Image (cartoon, rainbow, N blue to C red):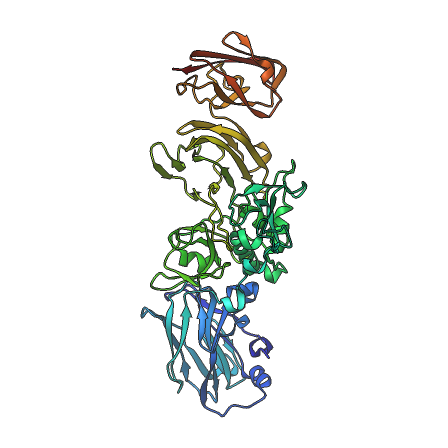
Length: 630
């Protein structure tokens, strides 16, 4: 039986801010309610200690009433995410003029002095009254007192309690720098969800029963290839689906975090359940939104699903510089293992010890603690709701490229491989240059891990995305926009050719209130007409200037061209060195394409033009691009 919840509450909270902690208080209630609950009588003129209590943040609204607190773990253990810690004492046989008080001393020696309670045989015409600065209870010489204080993110270690005018000796309890994981964060293991082995060494894998996302692998032992293969289509010949056991560490962490915050709302997720949910998250064009095309989890989509099902979980959040503070304030956090311990691996952090050791739940069951972490992805649960949903952009590249973004204020985030410069100027932005996931069974890192660039905030306007090749090949990109309503449409770039040190630019217009008003275009407008709206009918991701020098021996140039929504396709014209090449283009409003143009040694002049409909007239955008081959 929970003794605390059985008692009748007829008192009010005594709360003041004259101590170290803002919420320090006393709650009194008549002994008759307590005696009835306990079923025994107390001797007169005594005081006794009835135990320590705490109210974990995981209990939610229950902690708005201090009597919603529960007994501490093992009698004297609390946790730094707890909203309240307190102690119960019982007074009986009170005599006129007696007073009682309490002092809680934290591990740093700071004292928290509670207000005195004084007994008067007569008080304002009433008999036998216990009087404190904010509360009066009469008609009894016995009283139960809850001495409590706000404890979330308080000093961790051993606390000492002392009670005046009693024979109760000093008592101690431990406030641990962690979440109570035994009760609120049960482990989940990706290895519990493998696909069956075929038994055939020449084709060892199968596609069931626990496929991960819409990604496939070559059916060759220890082959690390990751291929996007939609569930709506047959698995390509020679491939099978990756399993949750192999690629699901990040997703398993997200399942643990969502379950931690959402279980009291009926949201309890296993990795297979979350996998199925995320696979089903698509935008209006049926683009995958729950995962990107290399199997990377979109954490915004997971948090959005939780909100739609009653648990107000936020991602991302504006955290602090201290992981420990983020955990005690917001709950468990998704963190990345140092690369020297394990490449491309994520775990769930639930505490930080005084020596900096990070306590973790590891979906691969390899680590119980880490000396440090190298990245944090912050979630917060329904106990700490934000007035506004954080909005922003998420760029994911699959590729031989690096990237950085410049926001409308001129601040940058990401990496420029030409100058070897990392940019960290945008608040609440981060860049992962190897966000793959290691094969948990074969220990094989993804050889071509995706790169993710996340930028969050409400700065509307044009963001310039600079993409630089780190080798010859092609890249794909997924761009997700998160607006204040939680909408997350996807914009994709497919099979864009690149080469070492080739710089391409894109312009993404961001509207945090309505993602449908956001748009992707080329970062170079062609240098044609003015005003600005006319010159945006045709824009280019490649080239990035009116004159471009190409390497000697180049025979083709990959033009990345964007067509605005206002164009009139029938008016499009293009000629290269005086010869029409319009048939190589497929202009359509609001689309883009890659056109491989033949070039020769020397000066190549490309002229393009198209009409577009402005609000009051039809205008023409004409561009002249020079491609120079030595």
